[in-house]
Image 1 (tube, helix red, strand yellow):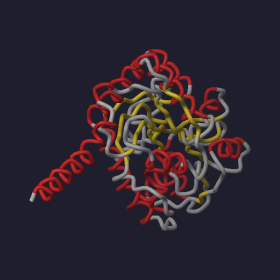
Image 2: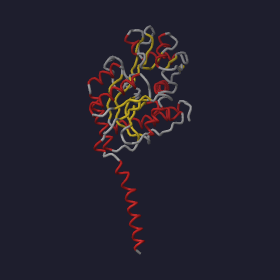
Image 3: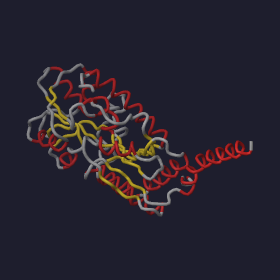
Image 4: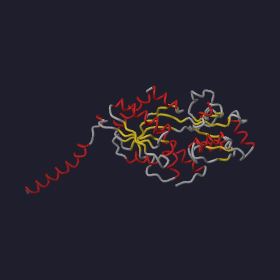
Length: 324
C-alpha cells in the first residue's frame, strides 16, 4: 500500500516537473528583449536592404539591445522569407516582409510556408513608387492618350515591368483588360533593364521605379503613378486610382515575424519600430529612395497582406500565369 502511494506521488512529481520545466526556461514577455534581435532581409542592396538597416539602427537605440541585420538573399526572396517562417516565435528573429514572395510567388510555385498562416505581422512602413513612363519625345501626353493609341492599333504598342507576372505586370494586364486594349509584353530581368530598353526605344512604356531618375532628367515622361495618393515629389502626376482604376495596386514594404508571437512581444516590436518609423531621418531616407512612408499597425498590415494574396490568386489565374 505504501509502495503504491509512493509510486503515485513520484508520478505526480514527474508530471509537475515536465509541466513546469518549459515555463522555467521561457523568458518573461515583459522583459523582452534581453538579448540581440536578428532582422532577416531577403535581398542584398537596394531599398529593401537600406530601409531595413535604417530601422534596425533606430530600433537598437530605442531598445537598448542590438538589432542585427542578416541578408538571406535568393529564390526571389523566398529563402529569407522561409528563414523567418521557421524561426522560433520568441521575437528574436524578425524579417523584412516583401510583396513578391508573400503575395504572388506562392501561387506560381511551391514555397515552404503559408502566407496567411505562418507569420505574425509587425507593421507596414512604406509603399513603392512605381511610375508608368514613356519616352519624353513620344506623342503621348497622358495615360489616356496611350490607351487610345493602343485601342486604335491593337498589338502594336509594347510595355514592360520588373518580373513576368510580377505585381506591376499583373496590374497593367488588369488595366489593359478593363480598357479592352491589346499590347505586347516584353519580358526583362528587372527594373533597370526595363528603363534602359525604354530609353533605347525598344519598348513603348514601362511601369517601374527605376525610371524616376530619368523622369527628373527630362529623358522620360511620367503619365501615372502607382501610389495610394499623389506623390509629394510629383504633385501634378495622377495616380491610377484617380484615373478610374479603383483597385489598390500598391506594392508595400513591412516587417514580420514567425507565427505564435506572444502578444506582449508583438506589441513591443510594433511600438518600437513605429518610433523608428516616426524618426525624421527615416522619412527622409524613404523619399531619397523614392519610397512613400506609410504606416499600418499589425492588424491593418495583416489585412492588406491577406487581401493582396487573395486578389493576386484570382488575377494570376485570370491572366494565365503558370501555377504550381
